[in-house]
Image (tube, rainbow, N blue to C red; front, side, top):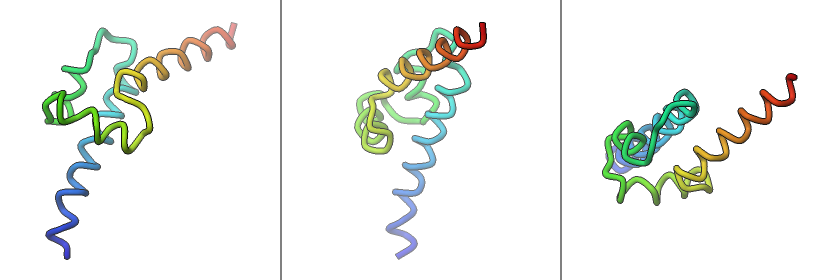
Length: 77
């Protein structure tokens, strides 16, 4: 049973790591290649599990994070 869970846990941890990478580097010039590399996946195999977990593609999530940070900065003025 634990052997079956390992790949799913590994996949989930890699996707979460990529999400945290986006959160921490959203102000930098990052793209799908950078994010997928951080997750140790090819960009073609990365998009589907990211979207399944977070409901957005990595690019959509990056855009969302950038917009929310811009709103937070504009609201603090």
